[in-house]
Image 1: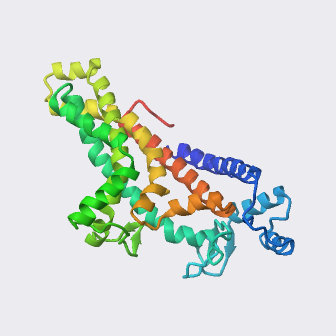
Image 2 (image 1 turned 135 degrees about the vertical axis):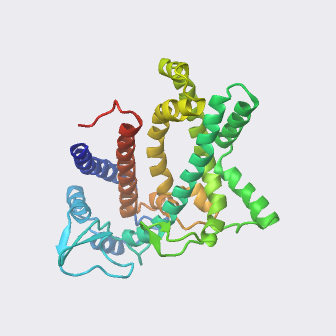
Image 3 (image 1 turned 180 degrees about the vertical axis):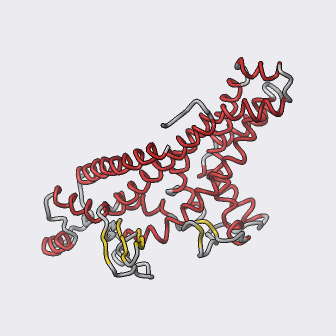
Length: 351
C-alpha cells in the first residue's frame, strides 16, 4: 500500500505538469489579453504593463518561469510572513530552515493582492461550504437510496425517488432564492445572505468548535448546494444495492439464518458502496473548489466568483492557480477513494 501511494503521489506531479501545460496553452490561444479594454490603452502604458508582468517574454520563457515559481521549492532561513502578503502559499519548517513553494504570482485584476492572498481568504470559505454540502448529500442521499432499495416499489421507494428527482430537477438558481424568501425573509429563521465562520480553523477551513453562528449562516446554502448531489447519490445507492441484494452470496447468507440487518449491513451495503464512493471523489473536489451560483445567490465570499471573473478578465495567474488547485483536490480525492476500495472489497489489493 505504501508503494502504491508513493507512485500515485509521483503521478500527481506529472498530472499537474500536464494540466498546467494544457491550461497555459489554451489561455494564450484565446484572443485578447489581460489589459485589453473597450478603450485601448496607449501603446506606452501597454508596453510597461507587459514588461512588468513579463508578458513580453516568449511563451516558453513565461511557462518556465511559472513552473519554477509554483513547483520548485525555495529553501530559506527566513520565516513566512504572518500577514496575507506572503509570496508562498505553502511553508514547511525543516529544522532551522523553511521550505516554501507554490508562488502563483500577482493577480492582474486585483492589483493590491496576489493569487495566494485570494486563495488564503476565499478558498477556506469555499471549502467550508463544499464540505457542508457534501455532508448534506451523504446524510440525505445514502439513507434515501438504501430505504428505496430495501422497500422497492413501495410508498417509501416512490417518496425517496421523488425527492431525488426534485433535487436533480430544481437547480440552485431556483432553490436558493426560494429558501431565502421562505426561511430568511418570511420566517426569519436564518440569515438570508453572508457567511458567519471566523478563524481559527481546523485543517485550514473547518471551524475549530461547534459554533451556532457558523451553522446558522451555512444551513441554507449547504442544503441548496448539497440537495442535487444527494439526489445523485440516492439514485446510485439504490441501483447498486438492488443489484447486490440479488447476488448468490446474499441468498446464501440468508439461508444460513443470519439476521436481515446483518445481511444488509455486513454483506450487501459494503459491496454496494463501491460505485457511490467512486463519484464522491470528484464530487468532493468540485464542491470544495467553489460553486459560483450558490456563492452569488447567498452572498458568500468564496472562490467561485474569482474564478469566473478571472476568465473574462484574462487573469492568467488566477486561472492557472484555481485549475491546479482543482486538479490537486481531484487527484487526492481519487487516491482516497482507491484506498477505501481496499477496505470495502477485500479482493482489491495494491501490493
